[in-house]
Length: 109
Image (tube, rainbow, N blue to C red; front, side):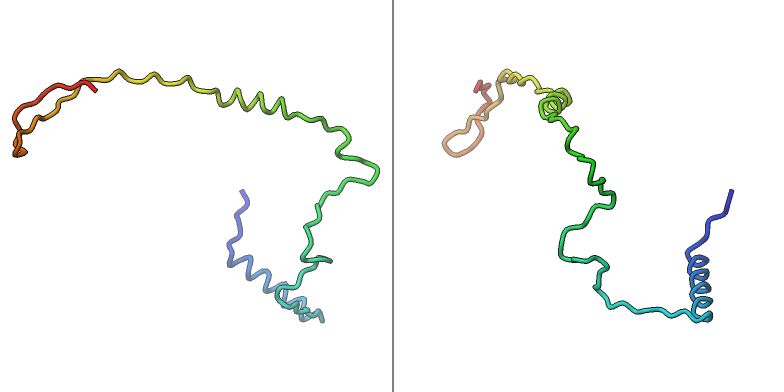
């Protein structure tokens, strides 16, 4: 298995190549920050793989909205509505006039 290079090794190799380039008479042109190579930097990005002018990419397409809707509906079936739980009686504390507990009663609500 071929050993991978570390970042330090890659950086040293690039520095060596740059030094060789400068020694052989090459020059490095500085480009101001924020400058773009695009013709219109504010405009939309152009696609990398543009179809030929003779080809019409939209000609062979058919609308599939109904098919997609059916597939999506099968993915997420509508759940059956849940039946409400039967109400169970609960204990209620009966208090006297002074707020003291007197007894418990079972109350159905």
